[in-house]
Length: 292
Image (cartoon, rainbow, N blue to C red):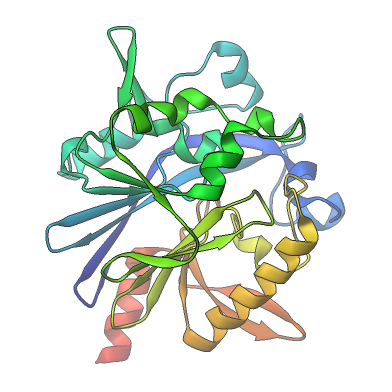
């Protein structure tokens, strides 16, 4: 999809499943299962979507999926489905090598968002994207090193430690423009120092909203994950962000929705709702029609 001088494409690092109850917190199953049918183990289907944004000689990749360094036990627990080098393979098939990526923006350091950042070669760990600067909120970087008992299983140090050793780590302090037209904004309800990634194209904003709104169904303000460390803060952050999304007609890229790549947001009958088109290709066609 082309917006202004930016080109956007989505790629996936495969699929996985998480417990539906954990994904929706206090929302009753009878409500969320209308949108996400659980399997026999109460898990719902989710994807590992990453965004590639290109402008001039910059190729910016947002998040890197779950990676391939998983034992059979955990592959079964999370029902991980991916081929060898899944994300990198999809990029290569589209004509983009790992070495061509200039910047990787990690929304946060949970394993399903940064697991593909590191690869194992000859028994040693090294960055997958060796020519890229890797942008992480400093608060999330520090939190990932000293998590609580409640969330420590979400972090795997080997997913990010080699970045610092390789000199590819760029720590960000708060909201700022990290590259021309690329702004990050911290939201900490889910985990301390998660960051939204906003691309200002001159023809509207594209926002990768990570785990603030991982699924289109979670545009509803009260539909918040049980994983969130501070759900009341998430509630406030969602309401504030979604109000801006309606006012400025943001295009939201959804990281984990297995069926919907993206959406826009409207406010109707007292709550926010996701509206289509739900793929970047359809958005491009709709946008072209509007301009004509």
